[in-house]
Amino acid sequence: MDDILLLEKVERYLSGEMDNEEKSLFETRRKNDAELDQLVVEHTYFLLGLQTYGSIKTFKHSLTEVESKLISEGLLGLAPFNGKAKIVYFWKKYKRNIAVAASIAAFISVLASGLMVTVSRKFGNENYRVLVDQINKTNREVNKLKSNSVIEKSPITKPEVDFRATGFLIDRKGYLITNAHVISRMKNIYIENRKGEFFKAEVLYSDNEVDLAILKITDTSFKPVSNLPYSIKKENSELGEQFFTLGFPRNEIVYGEGYLSAESGSDGDSSAYQLNVSANPGNSGGPVINGNGEIIGIITAKDSKADGVVYAAKSKNIITILEKLKKSDNQFHVIKTPNKTDLKKLDRVHQVKKMEEYVFMVVGN
Amino acid sequence: MLDLGYYFRHLRINNRIVQTLEQEQILLKGLAGSDKNSIELIYRDNFSSIQSFVLNNNGSVDDARDIFQEAMIVLYENAGKESFKLNCQIKTYLYSVCRRLWLKRLQHLGKFNTKLETIEDIIPVELELEDHEKRNDDFNLMENAMSKIGEPCKSLLDAYYMQKKNMQELALEFGYTNADNAKTQKYKCLLRLKKIFFAQYKNT
Image (tube, chains in turn purple, red):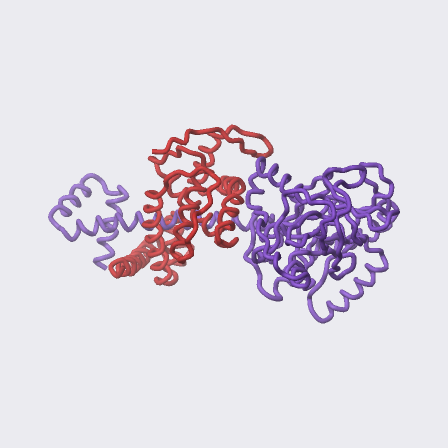
């Protein structure tokens, strides 16, 4: 009880609640009583600590509230989820979007089949066909049935897919290259890996001139991969150079082989090559890789009349675009394109094996 | 002493572009008062560059959030001081603090072997971080002590010393028959808290 009375006195003294008489009495006592003096000092320090503690706590509380607001807006990342949970998480997160997308998809597909079949590019070559695969309605319905039957067993599901094409990583943190025409058809973009997991992606930049787009996987369940084994070639490639391609003309990765047949693309387009290789809808955005493991181009289109005439954007466009973007926008500073290839001395089978981990299906609706 | 000068930066608020020397002072004032709008603006303006920095230097998204939070607390602690004068942009300040904090953490983990890449201006913040560390230690000691005194003491002290409620309100809220009872109870709790707090202080 004594302690309490004393403490009360000290607090009243410190907070200035004492009248003059009481105060001078207290101060005299303090002068003569070392223990009291120490208590005053100690309590001053303690109250200050308590106050600081309180204010930082309040501040932290505000911080957390702002954080959760920004997380819900998607500005801040979440901790990556592990294992199966991430797919459930993905599903929960996008369930609503997907449902909305599904309801309008039927409408769009009717529209799309009428509109998008003959999109010819700037050069006026009427046979120029971009190679994004439009999944037809029957296929889609079948897929839907398939995925429905999967849902019975597990919560794994896939988004509604109207278009399919290819993309590949240019930075281990989830930055991909694909074609501008690929993403121009999609409202929602997903990256599908070999395990059939989907990740939401967004367009950071799209260039219709060279037909390239930079995507970023925004889904936090995506974990940065180990270092990319291939590099991106900054120089032009030579006529006759051999290469291989990887892409998704089917729901499964498909390998192709060919050679560089002209140093310009359709109608003399100097930002592209002409290739002799087999390519089909779905190959758009796929990497063209030479024997050293350097990406030399990105498949964009083919001539619908001539056999084996395929066009690819030159790889140096990726470098030029990024250089330009980095000058104007800080967010591109984090993109580090790979500049060293680990594929040089491997035989083709092993090169492909190493490469295919970094080539993804780009799908969307 | 580094002379970094002060250059104006444009900040968008409600889509209006505002000249920022004044704006930053307003943000700092808001921050000092735990104002959520100010906190949000500072987050929006700075978090992504800090996140890029941490991700580019062996860190995760979570690390970036931790580091940014801590830097915000450092800024908060200083923004409240009369003597504090920010002689660079908030952006530069936060970046410098984050960089320093992240460097320390990397060193602590023994992961630190390469130079941290820097894409922004930095200012020296070592002294402020030393202060912050002391304050942080005190904060943790207090939090620990608070967690040990139990209820209703914790809530009672919280209501009186942090939410600044008066004795009548406390008596009503905690069901004491009168203000004097609440007061006695409060002092009992405070004594307990002090005892625990100083005990651990002596142990460290």
